[in-house]
Length: 245
Image: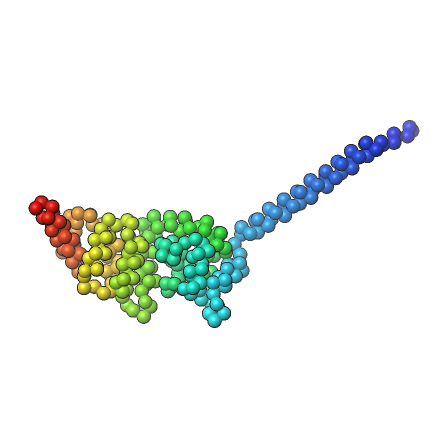
């Protein structure tokens, strides 16, 4: 049997390079797989991370309640003004019972459903939260929820200033008559709005034409809306008379 040729330094060097290259590729592949596993783990919802995130906004005296100061910091972190309608939608998702406060249970309920355990994930859900307002039935549920959420828990009715702020938030951009209605409230005797009035305002905004031609004063509308229609018609009559003269 003939003896094999002795390998030259060049051949040995080439083999070493190939071996090193294989090791490098193997190491790179391992790093990539580890990185992918890390990204996947971060992307999955973690209830522990969600609770830790909640604790970032609470204080030791009330560890189970996120209050006004924490709410302001939370809004800063997700890049949303506290008065933005998306915060109302988020509170609705949580089933929050008091404006300006989230309990630990409410936080976990809403953010588990949304699969959010960080500010970055919450920011990615903001457009979705806004978009659900486009569903008339969901909007109606949120509108009705807003009444009990925004009024003082020890009061049966909502004070007029809170009511105007919530109406502006929910209807201001979509109901052409809202500026007139807000002006009417400013000039009226009303200091509070009850739930029946609140619900009928939404129905009025959805069904009554801007020219009020289809408003039936003998219908089952609250007296407040009868008075608003009478007031607005008078305003328009006075405007027309001034224009003609």
